[in-house]
Length: 297
Picture 1 (cartoon, rainbow, N blue to C red):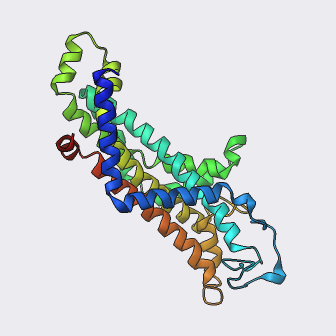
Picture 2: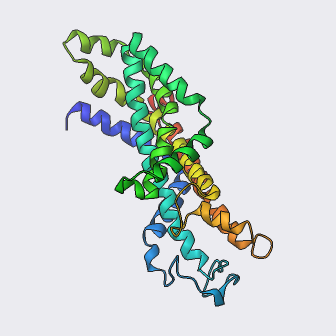
Picture 3: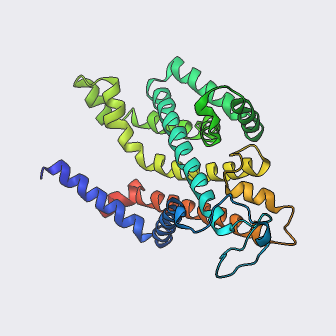
């Protein structure tokens, strides 16, 4: 194995070791993986998330219904599992889109500077001034009325509108990193050897930004899950009959004193999911700390 590959392998092992030294981050990875797996395999539940059984409404927790039933007799545990599919999918895909767009904008702005930087940052500032929740509601209502087949899937709509209003923070982060890294000696050396701007950005500067980008991505994912839940709670997110944690909370508000478990369990799932993602972000921050990693190499 060549020396560069040995160094890369050693650095990867150092990063992994530092990540799992953060015990809560390791527990959070396991918890999030468990939540994802139970959501993916929700179909093994003997109950349907949408079939109504009025004779079984408002049942408390039992061996047959672990989380009880809701106002229409639907098994709450099954609905929460299926709701986890939506929340985690929205969080993952909207984060990927927003971070990808933010990385492109921030890279171009920070590397080239000048009028490109001015235009892109003024655009970023303009998006930051939008009142996010109201724009999300308006965009959701507007896109749902468009005669476009793939927009009829309300999950796609929620992913698009969350990504469209959350790329600005990764863009500002990446721009700041590029402003510093573009002045380093290795960039000047690559440019002197005839390296193109694209090669310098993709092969030399961007890999040095991976740590902060990953940490920012965890924050974006937590924000996306909370936003999706809030939109569904208000009735502008993923539409029935698809269950989501937010929509379950919305229906629970009319029965919170009679059947508090309908509100407790989806709220608990949102809390646990967001906390696990935040702890993973803390672990990634520690793992990619350049000073500590360099000291341990």
